Length: 121
Image (cartoon, rainbow, N blue to C red; front, side, top):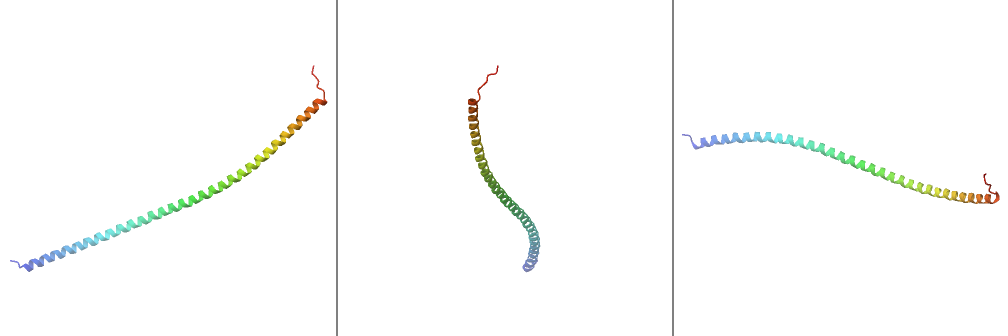
């Protein structure tokens, strides 16, 4: 009949072998987990870099649009000033034409008084 210490020793040896197997399995699991984590962190870095690049591109593009809008606004204001000047000149020319028309009317009236009207037969 086996002695209790012998049975206990066999159980301890079995338990030690099981714990060693668990350590090996855990080491393999830990290694694969670290590898997968490194892959995920690497992908996250690529995604973050791409996102940062996209944000930078949008910011630079927005700055360009703002600059172009400012330049356009300035040109529109400048054209507005020029348009006002052209409108004033046009008004001056119109007044001159009105004066010339009045003077021509006066000349025609004087000619009518000086030159007798003839009837065509």
